[in-house]
Image (cartoon, rainbow, N blue to C red; front, side, top):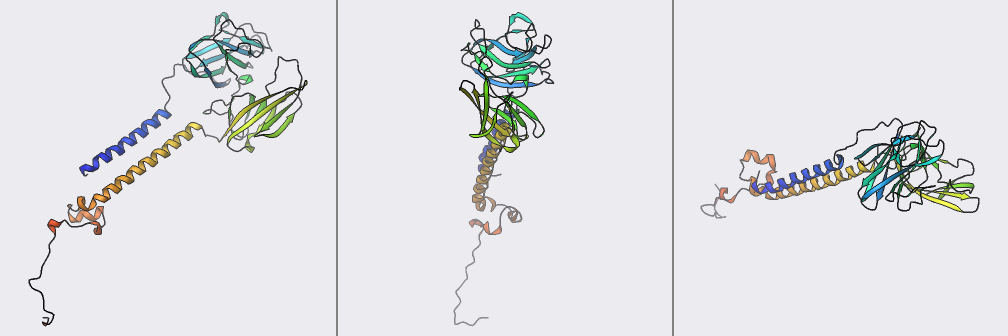
Length: 352
């Protein structure tokens, strides 16, 4: 290889290595997971939440226990706050109750230390038919939630789906498995990612602490009224097979007997089976990287072709045709032979 071509080849190799490193960084998990794997036979829910500042947060969970035996679930935050058994004590059956203790010990509070910013919450089912409605993270450890927990104004609320069923809040783990599967979600402001073809049952966000009666619930998809439900439990089933892949807007409007209404706007992300934003991102980076590599290869070929007459002419003749067409080779001047006639032939002289 010509010495002057080596820098270009080195640059090309460097670009390829950087491309591979970027893909490895995206595909591989960040850091080592400190939490051991939990049993997911009773379901798993993941959600994201954010806290405004570094500090210690008291965790409150609003749960409904079916009886005195089944009254707990497992809580995990990020990959270092692991396996917290929330509840498992004396909790009234069949009623929503706020719980802030672990392992059945009412004196052992669930306190976690968090950095400012976004975090990942995971809930694992531990006992049958235990429902989880809300999780509160509050810096005010003297605050005891009541109702929906809105009295703890400084708390950060994550609202999972009742029953511990998957909500599809994680774009890498969309809810459902396509045709034949059903997922139930609670109307909230949290985006929902669901596999196309899954039947999505929407439960309205009704103010259970209010004495007002619900008259009806209206459901809108992309600003179009699709259903009006006037009977308990006021749920509506969406056949996602009829929705195009991509982002849609779901608006749930609850009408109360006193004339007031409550509307909740939620984003529905309909995904194709096996599709995820992360995989799309990887494919996009591969495409960009491939274009860059092809451009560099094209530039290298063009640069080499422009140097062929001078660099290849010195090769033995039998090798020249391997690299370039014959007409591109110009013999160097030092090997050229010019024959001059010894005298000019007179046009009147007879030819021999």
